[in-house]
Length: 489
Image: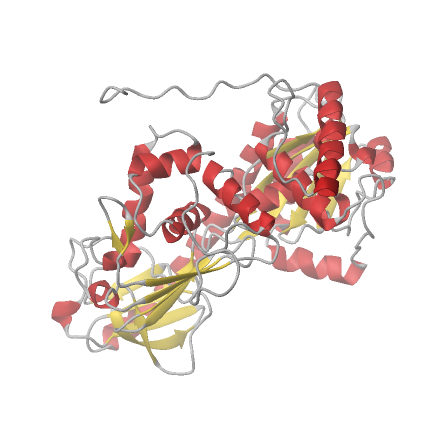
């Protein structure tokens, strides 16, 4: 029995595998997958002595094997024309950052030859720079400006892995699915818009597998954070401009009001405590002028410059008190959110790999907003286990470490600011009156691809094998929705 307060031991980390070891893992994994497919045996290999690929790499290989991608040939390449490349460069917002990225990533002395590539969120290479001879070698495998570097076409690679998992990733040597890429290593880090959290692209460094240094992953991640810092500075400047425009208008408005930018960040407020940010509907505003917002109740919405003028129409005594959280009432269930719990319908939309979203339909109104990857993971686990899970069980399901309860409790506290009485605790669970449905992607391996949580990976495998299905409105034929085992049987 574990003593109170004692931390469980974390799994030991293996030393990085060599290129030769990775090549053996690659060939054996593909051979065993083919053998299992031929015998319809979905069980994983049980040889404890066999080196296994990293979870993210193994999931990618399995997905590509199921798609039928040939590891020797890949698929037909997709290339953008010059006009479309220029258009995507303009809308990406990354063009002004090129000089600082170039100086940071390509100029350090003593660094081996590298190729810097910057992509959009769809994996199209918009810029590519580096040593000329290395670029000629890259051209031979189709790594050039305008190419779309996604798994479905070119197999497991650093750019696709970073965009799918939305975190810095390295794909070294034979971790690439295509054998023609085994002499390369690439490290990539995603770039997000700080105002919306939306993925806008990735920064990648590629070079010969034998000469790439371990520190390059951290360097690339730092460059991505630098890019996001520059984007944040631009957003703050835009917010200040909106605040200047809004001040005289708010002075003429009768009653409480606030002005937010297009992403929901507050520029100015009058007559009520200003939240740092409002969660605006993910699908945009409907045709009516009055809309229900989870933190303010019914509001009149009017367009203003690059944002919105929002005027609550509820009596002032129902407006958020100064003690409420920045984005809504306290998690105990007071305020407009409390009206949502009884008979509410909650839909977790995970159909788009990088854009999880939540929508709620309740007695007081309907609302929706985008979710962070971590919040999407938590809601998915709670949706598949309606009896509830403790913080330790959730930590084990997400991290393989039941001691990481502090992280879980903090994230659930943030979730309850938005969901109020829809989420209960001790254990954490959805309220009994809430109908929860989950819309998943067509390919089970596209279910929250950013997650490497043990329970999420088991759920993907179960969905692919047809032994489980996601919670839906009606229990039709086939496997019934049920709990996802928190540990292997």
